[in-house]
Length: 84
View (tube, rainbow, N blue to C red):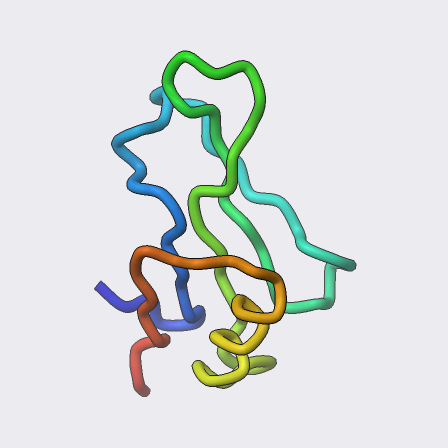
C-alpha cells in the first residue's frame, strides 16, 4: 500500500528479519529526504537495509529510482507515494 508522504523501495522482505530489530536511519544529513529502515536478518549480527524511503516533497518517483540505480540498489518492489 503506497505511503502518503514517501516513495518506498523494498530491498528485502521484512519477514526475513528478527522481530523487533528494525530502526530508521537518515541517509546523508537529516534534510536529505532519504531514510532507510534497517534491521537484523534472522541469525545475523549486523544490520541490513530492509527499505529506503524518499520524501515526496524532495524527490519525484523517477528521481528516487535514479538515486537507487546510481547507488546500485536493486529493490524487489518500488511504490510511488500515494497521490493527494
